[in-house]
Image (tube, rainbow over all chains, first blue to last red; front, side):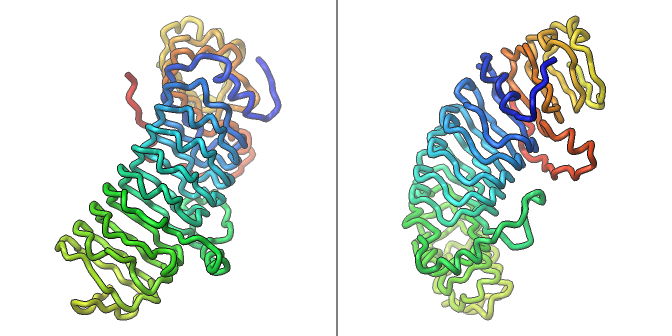
Amino acid sequence: MFLFPCSLRFFFSFWLRQCLNNLKVIDLSNSRSFAKTPNFSGLPSLERLILENCASLADIHQSVGELKKLVFLNLKGCWRLKNLPESISELKSLETMNLQSCASLEKLPEKLGNMKVLTDLLLDDTGVQNLPSSTGILKKLKKLLVRGRCPGFSLNSACPRLPSNAFHSKELAIKKQPFLPPSLSGLSSLTTLDISNRHLSNNDISINLGSLSSLQDLNLAVNDFSELPAGIGNLAKLEKLDLSWCRNLLFISEIPSGGTLLQIIGKGVNSVKNSAGSVTG
Amino acid sequence: MLDAQASKDVVPSTSFAPMTSLQLLKFSGGQVRGHYEHISKALIWLCWHKFSLETLPHKFRLDSLVVLDMQHTGTATSENSGKMRPRYEADEKSFVSIK
């Protein structure tokens, strides 16, 4: 038996020195002792990489981009992770990327749009301040969840409360880039969009959402804008629109005309009016 | 298949020698003492939760491995000292098709 000091570098070395051509799944969730992942080069068949709640993980090796068959990546609750390598956008088979509760993560790779088959991009409860402009070309994307972080609440109880981006957004209101990219016109498969609890201003959402032709569920709750994004009237498949606690919202200029809209949630909104009459929560 | 889920013991690696066709090995905690080369080279699924940090799988041949499930690696020590376990949510992580 070999004894080594407490470092998972040694643990990982077993996969680096042998042929693991058949390996499809790695699940090291809740392993708290490693700060870096090893080189992923020798894992040509890997489809699922699950590193959920790895509380020490701060660095993903850039070779992650070589995992050409990776379909599912779960880094949920890796709250020390500040950056993702740019090479992650080379994951051409990736369908699900879960970064929920990566509380220190503030920036996404600029070339995110290269992940052509991405269907689920889960970014709730992260420190992400804006979406890269290439997000708008993810044609297969169905679910885009970017709910902001609530003080005192976390999806992951193991994660300490870092300062909420709600405070940042007020301090940096003048300098910061708008939250939404200039266009989301390529997201023709998107069914669910959640950008709630972000205290977004009119400037953050000043784009036209009318091209999101598959959108069913739009959550805009707990934001600071006084006008809705343009184009909501064109969302023929919209079933649910959540405007709860959008306290500055006084007027809805357009509502979808398709007839599928089942529910407008408006808790905490003061007598919102629209062109057809009043909407209550 | 060998399921030693409740094992807290140290298992001598030689006890694996007769199991030449072992494909699925499931441990929770525990240790294997000796050379890992005695463990079947046909292993497809290794599920070994709470694997202790100090024990490196020496000569552990995993050429056939398809699934490596080693959750809670290196956390066994802190659990023993009475610290709170991190919350674990079982979601869609546990399925895969082996072709």
